Image 1 (cartoon, one colour):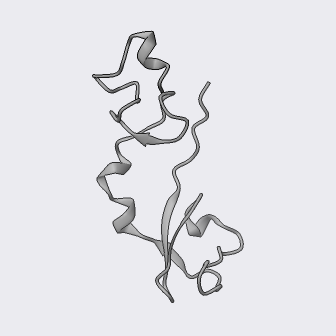
Image 2 (image 1 turned 45 degrees about the horizontal axis):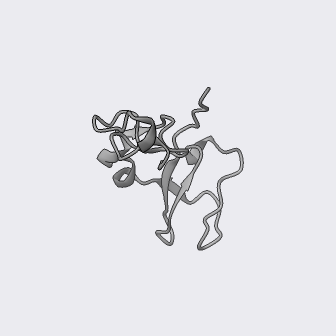
Length: 92
C-alpha cells in the first residue's frame, strides 16, 4: 500500500528572498518557521510562481519509481511504452 505524503509548499522569505520548501503552509505552524538563510522567524510566504508550475499537476506516485515523479516518464506505469516483458523489467 503506497503512502501518500502531503504536497510540500514552496515558500519565499519576505526579508532576504530565499526559496525553500516546507511540509505545511507557513500560517499552519504554531511557532513561525525559520528562514534558512537569514534566520528570522515568521517571514515566510507562499511562492505563488513555484506552486503554479504545470509539472505539479503531473506528479505521479506509482510503483515505477520509489519517489514522486513526472507521469509518463520512462519507468512510470502510466507510460504507454512501458516494457511489459519480464526481461526488460529486470533492468529497472
